Image 1 (tube, chains in turn brown, yellow):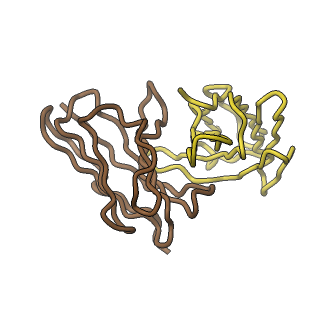
Image 2: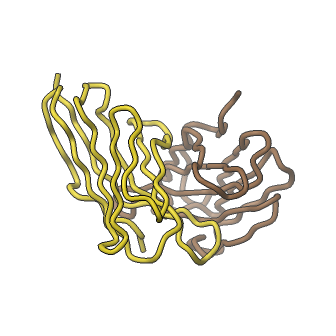
Length: 113
Length: 112
């Protein structure tokens, strides 16, 4: 069974550009989480969805960040415009009924120059 | 802010030795989990202990939970070089929805 799939694995972009990160959760999982990992702040929960509906976006740092889940098998995290301080590894995770464990993708390493 | 805080931040041991990592948290929890992260990869779930449990075993892993002290420990026995990774505790709070909050992690290095 395929795990959580994220793309791209690496993204390098210039400040001011739009960045879109993609995630395909495990089939049948009804919860999807976006996390950001940095050395300074560790793993931060940005937003999570239940049955494609955003439930809590209190961790989204600014209005430059937006996330969507148009269907049960796809979610995007968009940053527009991007800034150097957005450089981090972004993880998507999914779970069944919100219960542990979370299943993580391998992340997208974003570098904004 | 992070719910769980690990101690130590980094740990270096010889193969065959035991590794102990500690985690403290702040609020009442439903359960506490431990995850492992290899360099450049996502986190992988290792073990979950519920708030009404005190100890749990899985292979070479032993987890304890003390809810009165709001702390947990992860023991890896007979460590191997392949255990080299970062280890994170994570908690699901009793309130606030389905949020799993992670600690800062312990970086474990096992020397062959």
